[in-house]
Amino acid sequence: MDKIFNLLAQHRLEAYYNTFLTLGVQDERDFIDGVNGEDLDKMNFSHVEKNRFEKMKDFIQRLRAPQQAMPVQKSMESFHLQYTYPHCPEPRDIRDMDPAQNTVEDLMLRICHQEAIGNSRALCLYTIEGMPLTDDPFFNTWSLKDRHIENGSELYAIFTPKENLKQAPHMPQREMTDISGEENVRCHIMLKGDYEVKVDLTSDTIRVLRQKLSNESGIPAHVLLYK
Image 1: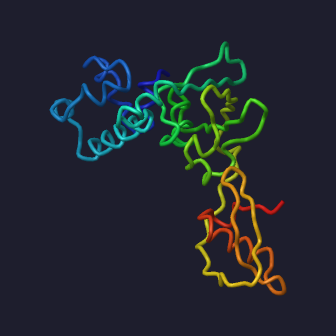
Image 2: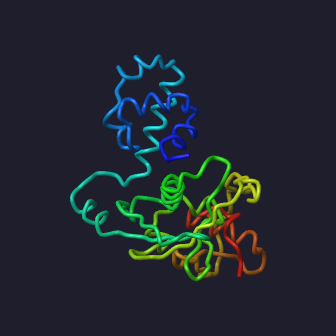
């Protein structure tokens, strides 16, 4: 199954695979600049299928870094990652991503597309030292820069059936917590830095402290683990 068929299958348009090949589609970029509404009409696309096609184009654009100002373009050109996976014959390259804007989730989508991974499997990423990068969906929304994924980083990928993964916990509604207190406590959040919160040492619990830290940092309380 090649990348084009896999891409169409993800958006339930695989029935048009051969027709798109006849039009001259060779890679995902051709869907953006080589296929127009008139082509879809000739292929007898329904209204629903046209909506799916537009969503597929949005997905394709997420695979590539935003095209904006020249300084961003330069950072994209210089940013480079490599990843490998079990039985991979040689390290694979990732380029054309903007570390300040592209997220870990964008990187995951890019790798899955590059390896033609279908909807039935998921991707887990690790640093070359073995530290997990994709354990919590919340942190997958952070940029590569915020996750300290540096230029030249080497990553390790594991492709696994989705049923092997634990479901992400439901994100609870943020609680309103009294932020008053006479004492300051400095808390460190990995990859984010230090925060000071006011606490009442005689009555506040760890749960209250975690909620206050969540309010201060903007990070959901359920992913703030006390160590």
